[in-house]
Length: 509
Image 1: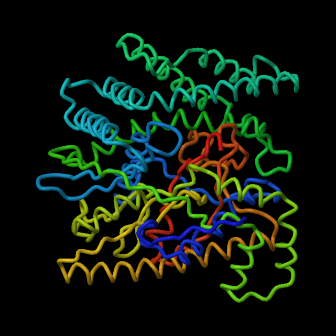
Image 2: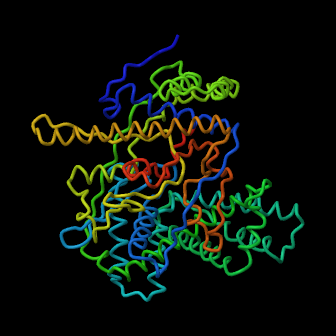
Image 3: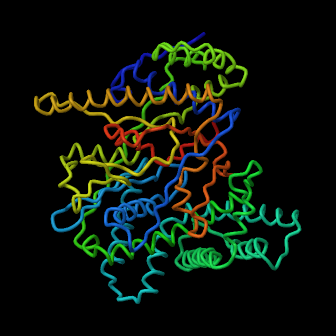
């Protein structure tokens, strides 16, 4: 017997039952379509953002903020995804950090790490020479990120193993690339990363092994490995190789830590004041909403009917396409979502930071360091903008909420204005999502990216131009779809571009 739940606005961050349906039903259907993989996919565009000394100031600041947030995201799975805004503090910069889902202990550990990293790079208290400072900075970053690196090591070793088998099948020469490079990688992937052993000697040995692997990957760029891996990956071809694309991806993930360390040091030379007399604020993570599927009998047909009714669509072809969805087992996926204990949308880190700035009266341009109103990436006009979308939209995403103060009429009026603006943004985002669903059903293909990380920026420099959309080994159950947002629509960009690179998989669901 179908069950419907009474939805109270206070349970869903102020959203009414109709708004919950409006926002999440298109997401649920797109995610289900991607999960059953019945439609072909095509890649979303990626942007390159490696640090260069010739970068304009604003672009360099964006790079710095992005990389600093990256090296604070120390665990896979989405909980530690971080966002950062740099404000003008009392005597220097004020770093404001937020994370998807870090507890107070995790926030305190992150603050200690950030303070130590800023102090190391800014003051260089031991007066290390440039090479030694680069090494110490990299070690500090690697030490904090060992949990994530342990998984990266496992996936890289698996990718190397599969590429070695590929070389053997193709009878490649062991003394030439790519076989030679693959064998060198194999030799450097044999160490173990035990994140439970915190003894100084073992931890230093683990970090040293990570550093050697990163150096080896960097050195590969000095050979013709870049050309051969591109050839093996067969970019842009129907016969594109997932095996070699996986290898390229994980080489990039490892090398991104070296690039982050060097980039942070270069930024300290450009703006020494960013590393002096700084303040740090760690924002407590937001709450999670209940599962937003409010009826137990929700199906793909019901969702499409709601979309057609909402937008008053008259399209026989669309209705025929919707009629075929139950045969794709999509309704089983939707039922799984209904039963999931982990389908509980959370406040993404970038929105968490922006909400904090609004509530604390620090969202104006003059509140930001050097008046660069920036959270993550990209700036237009007088609005604070965040890192450009990676092209994937996740179901575990929620709107911020604004609490009314019964004792303050002015604050209540401001809260009402915020609620009105939020409702308008919600309507327009939901409309874009419905358009995505309609496009998917009509074109029978899904726009998405297999990985949230900016492939161009995270890949080794010699592979930067190569964009991968193959299905990664570790993300085979990732639930994401693309949402198309025109850059010129600045009024929506703060929220619409803030889906971030969440990996909120449902584990044993």
